[in-house]
Amino acid sequence: MKEIRIGFLGCGGHSYSHLGCLKEIKGVKITGVFDPKQENVEKFLKEAGQMDVYESDKELMKKGNLDGVVINSPHTFHFPQIKLALENGVHVLVEKPAVVNYKEARQVRKLLKKTGKILVVGYQRHYMGNFLGAKKILDEKKLGKLVFVSGYLAQDWINIVRNTGRIWRFDPKFSGGGQLTDSGSHFVAMLFFLTGLTPLKVASFIDYRGMKVDINTAFIVNFKEKVHGSFSILGIDPSFREALLIWGEKGVLKVSAYGENSYVHYYGNKEPEPIPEIKSKINSPAADFIECIRGEKQPQTPFEVIEKVALLSDKIYQSFETGKITKF
Image (cartoon, rainbow, N blue to C red):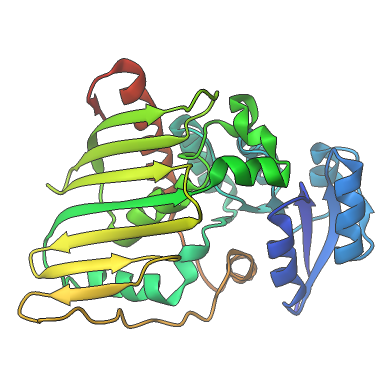
């Protein structure tokens, strides 16, 4: 088995979850790292072991002899670093959001087609048993034609950012947006991953809570498939909770990663029933990344999901800024 050489662009925060998974996979070697903060690098090396340390992202890409790179930088750095990696023949695992706008998403699609490389995004829910079970129900049309979708994601985002010291998330120059762009990306990607719906129109309302980035967002979406939806992404909550509900002509499905029970309730049945879980052999974005590099599968999250996340987010911000229903 050919050794797969992986580098890290940014080695704070979420990089450790990817590192932990990669260290468990045979035939994978972490060979290089770049982070502008020396303290981040020193801490990372204690966990990852010794490797080459580079002076810039460009040096890592050009001299690291890498098969793949894990990008954990601030959100607005993602696109230029994805571009840098792909143009140097390196596969990419990038933390969410992959990009911060639809223009960047379209450019990444062109680069992927041109280079033939792989891009995996850190959407953990797409490997979880209850979400895969929900997707199977929807793919098999057991709910019938979809009619309505709704849901929310809420957490104590403001204090989490402050307490972890990742306050770059409050600066749009680095974050590209607030809670909608950050944790909200998980929820919006989950919506498209499960349903495949195509947004047509959106109306939104945003509360910035006196900050430079969005904190609480409510939005209503009209989809091409003649489905309507209403959603909330909140940066204030004593804990963390989320739920996505999907109504079809034959029943309703509710799925959640945290804080809510998941179920499916069909017409004619008095009680809802648990969603049958589907265990995936691939249980993390990092494991998925390696399998894709080895040519054994395609990324769990189709690129069109990434495009739809970026496009809908753009239109949500546009609707709020113009005070109008925005068309796609």
